[in-house]
Image (cartoon, rainbow, N blue to C red; front, side):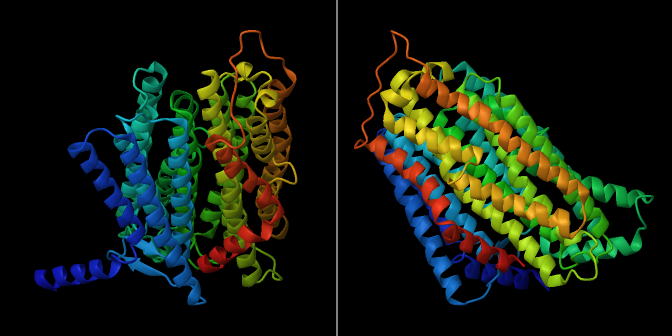
Length: 543
């Protein structure tokens, strides 16, 4: 193949890929317009957030149309984009909608809360949308180098957003720590990618399975140095993803970053980055497993990966909940809560890897194995949908309270539940859902995740997964104490004489926003099948 034929092939593939890449192109166009506004017009907060919201909504509508077109086929339609660097399928579209809808909610919150100010609005929304673009690429990455580029595109704007509030020493310090930890994690991940691609001769995720199978035939067990290097490379890639998920022990950036950043930014990082990172983790794990499903030569290695993820999930949930007990700053408390919930959600991925790779009895069919894996994915997607509203709602209420009392200390929330019934009721719904109490959506999210863990432990006789389940259930009980401590201050602690008045009526714009984020937490607990069915459809497309 000569040079002109290569150019013709790449050009044709790019033209075919552009319509499928529409939502990302809308985000890119919005970023360009915001930069032009910053350059050629006077600073205007209105033009900044208006452009950001309109561009995000257009991208969201584009993704929704793609979903409708996909459903009309009645079966999965998977296509490679840009010579296989990205993947277009139902999984990609689901996370596009998840991320774009979430960024619209965050943008509207910034309009209500007043952060950023008029001068910095275009810059802030460029960073916000740039990070969102990276997250969308994480969900569709089909090549190890695209994995690294997407993670970096997500991370670099996030560093700037954490330190965006000028003049705040805590924000600058948190941003610096975030950059240092992020650079280290990125270096480790890139080295792992180089090891994998060098050993296997390919960096395309769909080709990893065949390359790994051939590798397993040529190298016999961990006595071979190449085998150990391969395992080390997989571990290093997982380290990079674990950093984005703030899993223990790669969580150190999270509490400082959340405390130093504005509550709006912390809310964005707590949900969007978790969703994109879990999408990437699922793609990477499925690329390793391929179609072997317990019968591949490397299945024992992948089983160890699944059990390792389960142990990491249990430790992460335990650490996050225990560390939250001593926190006096509400954003730092919610940061440790975010770490704990990342542990809960990781249990679903761990269970999926165990189900797909564990040796099973003769009566366990391939279909039952796939049904168990689908249950895990369905539970994770439902959990993320509920987490969207309950965690964003909690951070949004923190931002609105900050604007009223100019404090983010839990002790200053005294009597707020009675002084502002809207904020109190919204916080109560979000925190009880984060605990996992019925009838809130968080209860059914944890129930779905734990159901996958039970399947992995029971059908495939993995005692480690029983331990993971017990730790998860115990942590659910432990978490009740520090969440209730916040509500106790809000409802049972009298306000001091010099407390600032809190005025936020239900019919105000902020009041409606609190309802917009807290009411879905209740509805998702009532209409479980609505999101559960969508998660089941996506899981069927994956398998």
